[in-house]
Structure formats: structure tokens, C-alpha cells
Image (tube, rainbow, N blue to C red):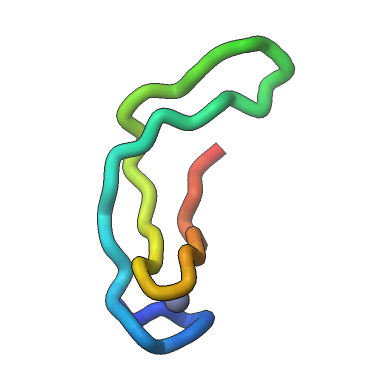
Length: 47
Ligand SMILES: [Zn+2]
């Protein structure tokens, strides 16, 4: 799927460690996110 922001590149599936937004100092490990290698857009980040 092409990036909807810049249309320069395909999104890349990548596992990330993301800080939780639930108010505690919790890190979510291995969350799969799509990101664009061209502009860094992350349209499908899951909270
Ligand atoms: Zn992009």
C-alpha cells in the first residue's frame, strides 16, 4: 500500500516498542505498525 501522505513509497510493517498512552509508565512491546520510509508517516498506529 502506497503512502497516502507523500505517495513516494510503500508502507513498511515493523514491530515497535511504544509507550502506552494510558497514563502509566508502561511500554507496549512488539506492536506492529506501518510506517512510510520516505516521510515517516504512521497512519495505522494502534493505541
Ligand atoms: Zn510517506
